[in-house]
Length: 393
Image (cartoon, rainbow, N blue to C red; front, side):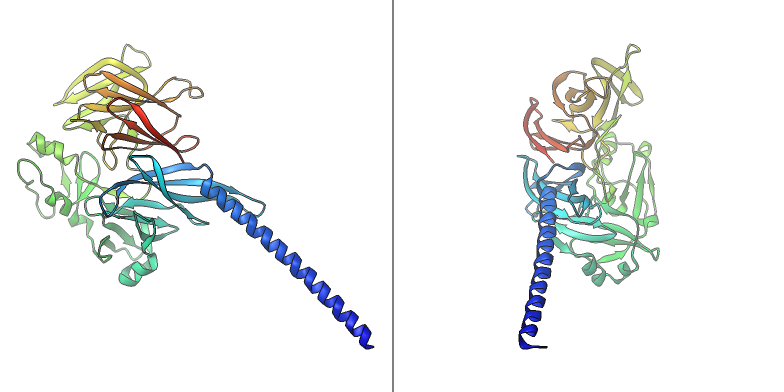
């Protein structure tokens, strides 16, 4: 082969190689651009609210941890990603957002102040409330606590009093994982857990540490069941309802329910005049009193975050009722109303229909998270019902 022929062959080979490289580069750039556009949509687009939690920063400031899901549609990927927002409940400002790209749904609960537990795809980690960054990864927790290497089995729980995680491993052992020291110790539910007949469990340590009125409860070391009927002091019975329970990592704690408790009184609703509207009913010392001054369609009481008590406003006098504007689900709106225990209606706020994910009071603001078509969190001045802010998720 002549020298000119060899040169021509090399030129052709180089030209072909450049065309291949350009094609691959353009394809890679397009895929990267498509991925970035999808990620930007997850970052800025609307989402479906899954859960909301009240937490505290290391300095004690209240914050909301909001879990939502946003769709991602592109030429190469169609699906959704989960994300966590850090929200200031006083102003409704979103401070931070973290995306769990191609990962499982993050289930979380507050731990010690400034920290929260987060589980995703079977891996448990501890994160910082101020930054949402990982404080201790699953791997580092296993390295510190070798029994965790057996793998986690069943739901993870959190002691509301200490913020410690209660986990069961695949080997069958139960551990109490401290959220400050990150050290786990054996946990024996049969000896260290108390069942409350008003609902929920709590640790024996939390019950003994509680400063209850009228002196401590006469509990034995192995007592596991506490009946309020045997607690003679009404003040103690009311205080027991407020003690932090053991919660399961996951959805919000709680949203709304057909009934709840205010102090040592039970509240609910009952149909009046045989119609579809219901009025407030209060039971105190087995006496039921119905107060039909205000009636509602499909009423539910908002429950205070992390309790099974009715959310109350100022001196346990005011309640917040979630109800509907119409029996027609296609046209009905969600209504939030401030109601006194005597049945007096003070104000009503309209919101898109949807289940209540969380409700809490932060200073003078009533914060309600709603699982609407697009997740919504609303901040209401509870004194007069003025809507201070709305945040679309």
